[in-house]
Image (cartoon, rainbow, N blue to C red; front, side, top):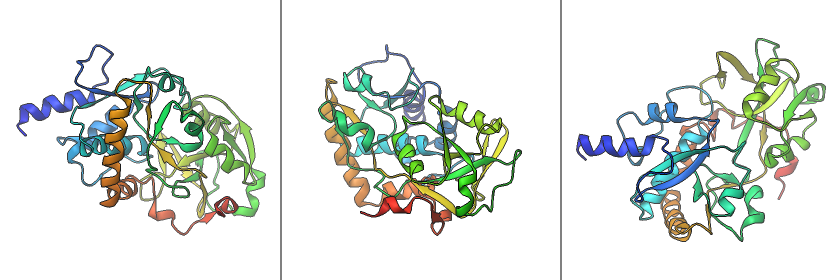
Length: 296
């Protein structure tokens, strides 16, 4: 690929462009209040997303959104759709607000969804094969280390602590209901939940494990750390969803399914999630707080 063609392709992929973009592109909705463009650009460097064989994070924290933008594009390409993907920001509090994709206003989301969130709408949504299977998604109990030191708290002491929880995040909510902590209900953006942690309104927050060597996370110059040796398994599987009511929904979904099947057989889906820290080998032997939920 020439330098000119590569640069043109990357511009189409990376820019978050409004609705007047030319017709030979596909659009995937992302959250307007969570702009991942900078980290996404840094990860890609001079490569196109189709050339990413190994994910190399350039910063700490969770890279779920970034790796799924790459997986989505690679799957569609392998499935036969060659158009570039435009990640278009939408004013939604979270991707659980699925009315626009149910009615066909949106073709697809740029990241996966929990099955429990989407299964009741399967009359209006195509739901892909799982990209993260039941029991594979784990999260840590993070706290602000400037406020307290909870690193070595044991599981039998968790009942003394409060954790912020959004009842609309069904997998998180169900998991925390099966934990000994006191849940503080909050419906709102992730950034406001972490502000509650900073203000000592709550002690803990459930967060995807950071890709950093020590699992620490930095957000707006504040440092957060997970309780050592304890984790929660989110009791659900994650899937990409495509609108059945969008004119290109069936075509896109068939290509997506084909591409994901190829990637799964090659072991590429799991490898990319592991390299992004979503499936984190550093916590493989940690104790599961809600392990009773994993009995099938």
